[in-house]
View (cartoon, rainbow, N blue to C red):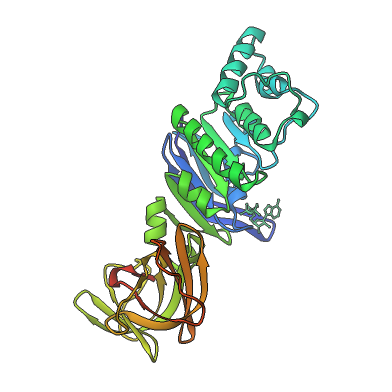
Amino acid sequence: MSSVTLDHVHKRFGKAKGVEDVHIHIESGEFFTFLGPSGCGKTTTLRMIAGFYYPTEGRISFGSQDVTMLPPNKRNTGMVFQNYALFPHMTVFENIAFGLQVRKMAKADIKERVERIMKLVRLDGYGERRIDQLSGGQQQRVALARALVIEPQILLLDEPLSNLDAKLREETRYEIKRLQMELGITTIYVTHDQAEAMSMSDRIMVMNSGVVQQIGTPHEIYHRPVNRFVASFIGETNLWEATVTGIEGQNVYVQVTPDISLCGSLQQASPQVRLAVGEKVALSIRPEAVRESAGADGENVVRGTVALAEFTGACVNYVTSVGPHQLRSMFINEGSAVKQPGEAISLHIPKNSIYFAG
Ligand code: ATP
């Protein structure tokens, strides 16, 4: 297994920007995800690691080896593509064996290695099936087996679950994680799906418009987003613009509207934020942090009208109109009556759940 370092890597396509100044060190054995909306530069970055694109600037290394200009077949990476890129007229066995045959491995060794990997991805017994006789989930596992059979030092996965339905996607993400942990292989995963990224990764790199926004553990990215983009892209949040009106000790007082003033804590702020009286700031308030308040008054209690009530079984989600703003909240369903649209509601926003995003 190998670590991967991108040292101030840029990629331009003529005049068009691909990615800008990606600077990361991925540890050996780490599950690392590139996450962001379409066109943010995830695939371009992955392709540079695979060797399909060469950087315009910067350096890429695997461990201590500089691979910046090395062709793909010299890098010992295994890749799974979004559309799997399997050979439809070949059997499962032939598809998985292909990379070993190209490497001129002895027949008996190929058989042994392919059978072992088929077992690992739970495809034993399927060797003679043609690809077009398999379900989408099984095809996905063939693609994974084909990438793993060459015993790569790095596994690269480009949106490998996007062709599967929601239930299978969830099952397969546990399967990939299980395999990765079992093999301890350095894995780089590309997705635009934040739930996928959060549930599988050791660390996530969030990108937007070719620029890295934040690198951190799922917990850091969720609870300490550096800016508005990360706060709203990861999970649901209420983003309210406000003006700082006072700072006393650890307390930060902000005015959201003439009628809504809140108190937050100095400790709950992105390093990118300047907290000073008169500064405009973005407040990120997670729906699950909002509480229903028994009384209509008090610090950080806001009064509003239910605009939307959604009962999902485990939870009740409300969208509440609070002056010109909407406040999303999420409560664990404990069996009490669900409020209906039009009903008054008082909500408490705990001080420590107000995060000042940059
Ligand atoms: P998606 O999720 O849609 O695949 P992405 O985050 O992987 O998006 P990239 O495919 O890496 O994004 O694209 C990043 C930027 O680089 C985009 O603006 C894209 O148009 C541009 N780009 C990517 N490949 C090329 C290319 N071969 N020629 C010109 N521009 C390109």
